[in-house]
Image 1: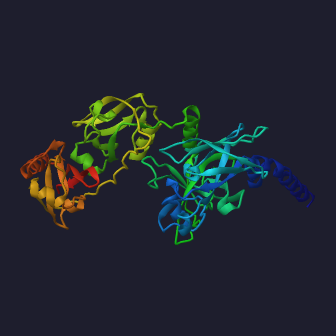
Image 2: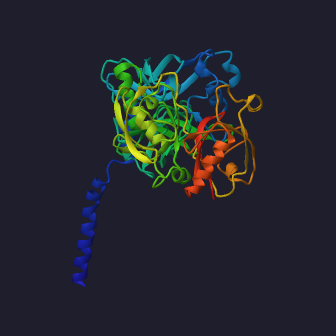
Length: 475
C-alpha cells in the first residue's frame, strides 16, 4: 500500500507540473488574439450621393437584401431603395491599418463615390479620411488618416499557407456595431464568385454581415489572412448564413504595395481567352494526358498573338509554374509586371514548344473575359445539320458580316453534338485546328479523325458568348 501511495503521488505531481507547460505550448487564447488585433481595426462611414455610379444598382441590392445564391457586397444597407433616388445614402464599412502613419486598407466598393469619409478608431477617436488610391481590377482601396502618435498596424500572414478547417476570426463593423468579433473556420479555398477572372476567395463560416466589408479575417496567431468582401445571403434579409468570402492577404499586400508606389494597380495580360482542357479535348489533340488550359482565341495585336500563340494551343507551363487551371494562370499573369518576358511551354501541332511572351498592361477600365466552363462530351452520334453561311443564315441567326465558318441549323437532342454543347445558330470556325468554310470541310476533318482512330474531334465554335472549344465524341 505505501508503494501505491508513492506512485499515485508521483503521478499527481507530474500532472500538476505538466499543466503550465502544456498551456504554454498552446499559443495565445482567442481573447488574447482579439485584444492584440482590435486596436488596428477601424470602422468606416460616409455618404454616397444618389448620383454616384456606385449607388446604383449595387447598393440597391444591398439595401433590399441579397437574393438566394447571389453574392453581395457587405456594405451598409443604408436607406431603402426608394430613398436612394432622393437623398444620399449613409454607407458603413470596415478597414484595417497597415502602416502606423495612418494608411488603411478597405474594399473599393465601400468608399467608391463616398463623400465625407469618417474613420472611427478602436478608442472611439473620429478622424476624417481621404482616398489615396483604388484598384480597378480587384476590390481594394487605400485610405489615409492623420493623427499625431503612430497608429497600431496589423501583421499580415501568408494566405497561401491557409488550410481548410483552420480557425479564423472576423472583426468589423456589421450594421454599425463597431468592433464586433465573430469566429469560424476556413470552409474552402480558391472560390470563384464571378467577381473577376482571377477569383481566389477564402470562404468562411464566420458571421459576416453588411458593414463587415473591408474588415480583416485573422488566423489564431493574430495575423491577417484575408479581407472580408462578400456574402451569399438567402431571402430578403441579406444576413449571414455562413457563406462569407475574403480576398487572400497575399493579394491584398501585392495590390496595396502597388497602389502605394504608383497610385494605380498595373495588371498584366496576355490577351487571350482560355478554358480548361478536358480528356476529350486532350484526346482530340493527341496529348498524352489532359492538362493545362486551351486557348480559345487571341486579341489581334495582343501579347499572345504577337508571340505566335493561336487558338487551339495549350498552355502547360507559365514561367516556373505548371498550369493547373484557368484562374490560377490568370492570377499569375495578372501579378506579372507589364513588360516582363515570360517563357511559356505550349502544346502546339501535337508537340510541346517554348514560346516567349511579353506581358502587356490590362487597361484599367477593361476586364479580361471570364473563363469558359469546361465542355462535356459523351459517346454517341453527332446529330446535327450544317449549312454554309449565306445572307439568309446571317439574317436568321444574327451572324456578323465578317464571320466565316459553317452554321449549325439543327441539333438532335440525343446526339453527341448536343452532348458536346453545340446549339442551333452556333458557327463552327475550325475542326482539329483547320479552318472550315463549307459543311464538307467539317465532314472531311471528322472523317480524317475517325481514320486516325481518335475518340474525339476538337471544334472551335463561335456564338453570342464568343469563341470556345468543344470536344465532339466520335464513339
